[in-house]
Image 1 (cartoon, rainbow, N blue to C red):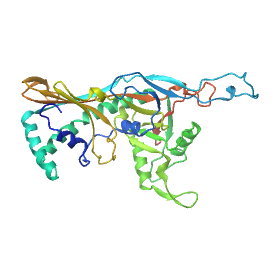
Image 2: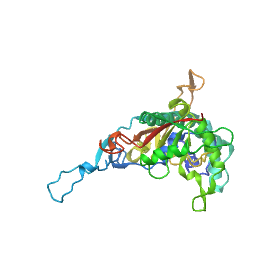
Image 3: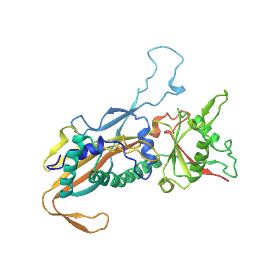
Image 4: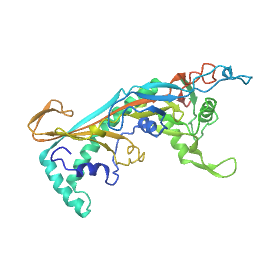
Length: 360
């Protein structure tokens, strides 16, 4: 750690029980992390933390014109796969300041509780929560960046009507039509639906209350298996008020670029560099954040320093203490629209469909 910043704080963040606390839902980030990752031909970073170009491999499928009716060595050839370089052009960060006296007391508390296996003291909890609670800022900025990138890769809008009047659910005109379009687009598995549509959220809530039903074989089945909905209020603005995106799993993903690893981790100068994850279990969305790794820098402030106050504005004079910086660099992978040959039935399709939900 940075000199004097006790290791128990990092243990507190990563090894303790999961904490339920509120973070504004980040549907786009949750969906992108849950999705299968593309085949990475070359990682962005070696094990020692040295940057390289990130290269992703994908494979356009064959079409009839590439097939032949003869068997000989003179037929034409097609490339086995295509490659694209990924630009890790997205970043989010935040900073916190802890006076040295707080850390002195925290370390004293930690020494006692770790030795006897006791629960955390109120002061230990407050230090941990100061970091976890403020992380809502980087979560929201990251989610906005991810959602914006996915929307930019989405095609034009198709209108889908879901009748929500009275107690009826006109699935024939709504969800079944949408799922049929996804089948024609050759979606595989359970499609991801992403958006902030209140109409679709209401519909989804009704469906979940009727989740168990009898299927065509006369067996009880979970009807929600037809899709997985990721709600994200911010997308009412980023996308449209009642639009949603249907995403073929594997067509969108987040690729991480960790910095504080290998030779670039540990105590360097007056700072400690490392990685943390968020141990919390959200009250509505489960273990959404435990797969997200963050770079952390703990920098010792050994003299009075002027810092910017991001809450009240202006500046504050910080005496001896520690500045904690949390950051992340990443790329939002969306399948190229050239993944399908021009003669393919899905030419120009990259695994994303956009729908406008109405209830007229």
